[in-house]
Length: 340
Length: 278
Image 1 (cartoon, rainbow over the protein chains, first blue to last red):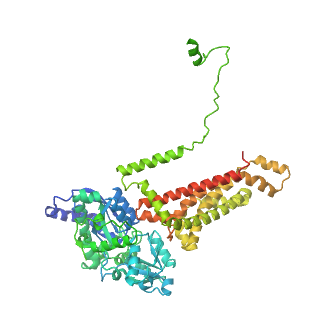
Image 2 (cartoon, one colour):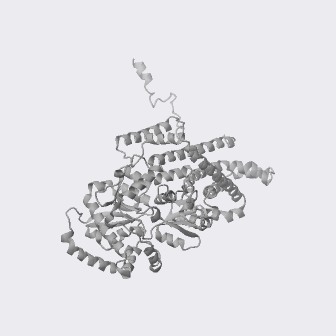
Image 3 (tube, each protein chain N blue to C red):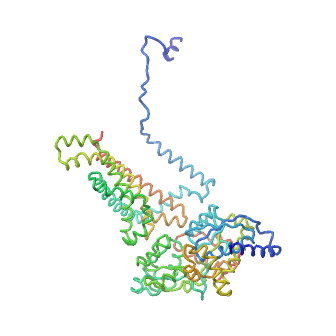
């Protein structure tokens, strides 16, 4: 009921603002499918949908949920999904090289001063001397797949500490890594704050470092779409980025900078809770959602310096071909870029 | 002239006193060996894909170019990585599948021979058969650890159930008249099992084994999902997560070859063990 009312009010607000907002380039009631995962880092899409920002931008958005980044990239390549938000992986870049997908903006970033992703160690390894990232050399570091963001963070930690790389153990799913870390089958891992904080509170797992200290301004996730949308459907793509950007601003203001007070946080957590941890009760889910708050780039700005670093790392690992350049998979014509 | 045309023409159908030529109608429905057919199918299919990807009506997103896949395989062999991946996989396959097959055949024979065992174990086997073994993978990691033993266990568990079902089915299908004959000749129980039941069940057991070993190869990929840095399955999964189609297909080709080789090996065993079957 509240949802309907809010939407109605915002619809009216939107209609009032429509005269000034309706630019000719923007799409009119176009249908768009947006890929998402049940993570707080996708809140930009959730808020934009629930608060009607996509409607204001002239889009009729349907969310489609995925379990992992890779299938979402493939769904965009196949044309089943128009826009997605996910980490830059070797798979994403290889799909881009084949002319399927393009990165058009940035989303989640590490920012000094905001609790970001954390390095964790199993209790067994912690007792054995793995108390900081300097001890990572030769340890078993859990990753989902080769070329994933976990792989990147693990490799960067060893580089930063100036020690030999750990041994990367592919476990496919986040759940499998959690199990392996708790039972001491892997020694270390890096993960988003809401999962990290929950784990570090248990006796089996210890926090040993922050990703933001190792890779400052790490562009964790990016907004991407098919090359067809980026090249030929400028109106549609701009409309999406507009709605998404409004959702992101709301999220940053309320959840990250906390400028709107506690009541606004509660209200926003209610929106996010419809998609994230929806199987848990609100009282249990809320702390996790609040703990997971990390900066989403304002206006979907893209940190090209960080993207270039990730690209160079993947090439040095032999995960992707050496003739891929930033231009192969990034279209910087849509959003502002951060170069340093 | 008229004579010649008469001879080449078929004899008139209704000539009353002449012997009528009747064609043997018992033929057909027999598989004849055509060795050249399989290669032709493969060559035509691969050539079609090659031409399609080269001319561009099959996009590089849909299928890799077969020549690139071949180049990847050659490169894999030259760099020595092939054996780096093949040796762990073959070890896992050999240990896991033989564990599963040996235990499976023993349990299957027991079910076939003893009605108490049958009453107790058939429902249990039926209950664990449909469990997707991949779903139990995280559990196996806790039980057996992340290293080799969980992979052996997964493959063994996956080959066990189909082997049991095939084996007790084969034991059930042993010709009862042969067993009765053995009994009337006064053979001991053990002698009947060894000389009549086991040889009689062997064809069924071996054809069951064909299916079990194919399942073992499928499970190899699943087993290498967790914590394997080397192995054909790990190679395929990594290629999949990187969307590297050439390497993905190179891995798939290796798995297919493994399937053909195991099936051929069982064919050889069949020819040896089932020599009595003429």
